[in-house]
Every structure is written in structure tokens, then in C-alpha cells.
Length: 325
Image 1: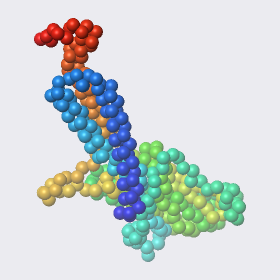
Image 2 (image 1 turned 30 degrees about the vertical axis):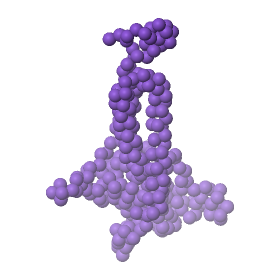
Image 3 (image 1 turned 90 degrees about the horizontal axis):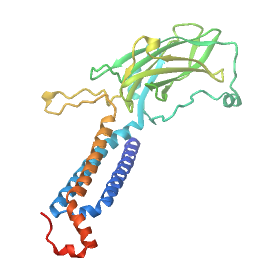
Image 4 (image 1 turned 180 degrees about the vertical axis):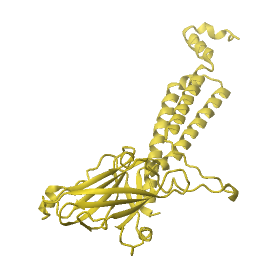
């Protein structure tokens, strides 16, 4: 794993942990400050017990945050690798080319990104804009390749598409994007330039992709965008989803797709849940409730003592009387 990725994960995880500790410490400090008078009047054994309970709850909360921080840091990064070629070019082993490809590491998009080329910028750079050609993606498909844990979610897949032009020939390239359940599009690959000839099938192109990290299990869509060297804008696109293909696209990255360790090997079985992070939030909520309950218990542990001291200050003669049993 590249050092830059580890450094980013460590920095992000540390930042999230510090923020979580600060929030919980502020909450506990506020509760303790509001109940300091009552706790001072409690018996030493009761006070020690409540203090230990508060500390135990705080330790549990901090431990939970420490566990969740690396997971949150992982979600902020995405890593994949892809390779492409003309499908008819049998001299190229696409899988071998993919193995030699360096992973693409990028931050996970937080908002929608506009991947359309700027027409003005391309015209200023001398890009022509032919109006006598119309493009279309005549056919596109997805081939599912690798599902290591046999759960129906694939981390490796092949996108195959045939781009046609109605007149002459053209030099084009494609961009491949993926999106999980409506999230912002994430670009995984830009192909090399390749030639297309009218409606020839021989110019069909294929792109093999491995999702390595940062792609949680879910329902995905794949977007293909086609650009021509003779045009200022995108010339064709196709959205591959369950409507186009007739079946759901279930992806996950390689981390989620690792097969479980065999029980007979003596190692613990690795299991990944496809659920979200709502359980952690629920546990944190109940921990907060426990802190409040512990503090309220400290207040109510010996109320007659506080009441008697206030009465003694108002009526000094009451101090000579023995306390009520």
C-alpha cells in the first residue's frame, strides 16, 4: 500500500478521533460541573462508585470512536485500477496489463463533478468542431469477473462498448465512471485514443477494472462518456444500470470481497457486514444516556444531607439536634 495513502488515512483517523474525544469530554465536563455540589455532599463510597461508572462509560465511548475512526478515514479515499484495449486485439492480454497498472488513488467525491469538456477552452486550443458527424454508443455491456467471497458483489468487472459514427471515421477516447446508489460519479479510467469506422463491430472497446478500496458494497451504475478529437464537447454517452441491462449491478471493493478464512485453519473467520454505520451511532446514544443517568444518580444519592445543611444555615439552632434516621 503506498505510503501517501497510509499517511492520509492516519491523519484523517487521528483528526476524527480528536474531534470525538473533544465532544465527549465537553459533554462529561458539563454534566460534572452542573452536579459538583451534589456529588460533594454524597458519601465517599457512593461518590467513588459513580465516578468509576462515569469513567468506565467514557472509556467505552472513546474506544468506540477509536474503532470507527479508521473506517471513516477509509471511506474518504477511493482506489482502483483499470486497463483497456480494442476487443479484437488478441495480441494484448488485458488481465496482464491490468496487473502492471498502477492503482488510481483519489479522494472520494463529496459533490457532483462536471466532467464535460469546456468547449471554449478546446476551441482556444485549436480543436475543430465538425458538425457533419453524429456519434452513438450502439451497444454496451458489463461482464462480471471476480467475486471472491461468493456473496453476489463483484470487485472486478469488464465494460464493453461499441461506438459508431454515421459518416467517415473518427479518433475518440472514453471516460468510465461509477456511482453507488445515486452518489456523485467517480471516474475510474480514461482510455487511450482509438479509431472508429462507421458502424464497424471490429472497433469495439473493452475496459477491465478492479475496485481496490473505498467502494462500499451496494447497487452501482456505470457511465460511459465518448469524446472526439474533432469536437469540442462530449459526443455520446450511455448509462449502464438495471434499467439498461435488466439486472442489478452489485459491486464492492477488494477489501470487502476478501474471502473468509477457513475455520479449520485455526484463525478467526473474517466477516464484513454490508450494513451502514447506524449501529455505532445507536451505541453512542445509549452511552450518552448512561452518563446522564449516572450523574442524576449522584444527585439523588443523598438529598437529605444537602437539605439539612441548608436548613442549618438558615436556623443555626438546628445544628445541635441529632440527624433524623
